[in-house]
Length: 97
Image 1 (cartoon, rainbow, N blue to C red):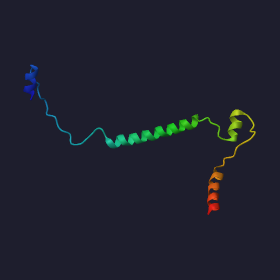
Image 2: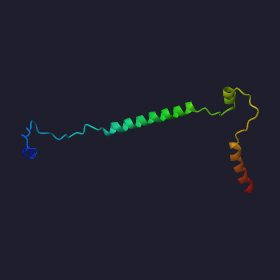
Image 3: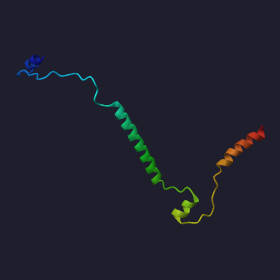
């Protein structure tokens, strides 16, 4: 094969110093290592994203937030009526039964 290459390239034939060996064990890339690094990196990025979103969240959620951030006194509040909505559905079922 080295004579063929030399003939086509019109140069002195290359010298073969050592025959190449076919590896029997895969050394790279390590699939297990790459998967573990990917999972770890994904968890760290997700944790960082959640932390950044919670730190940057400046919405007012409670009455204390109004006092703390706006330094205003609260005049009125509308209660959270999720419990009323769920109990009223149960009440309607009981009335019709």
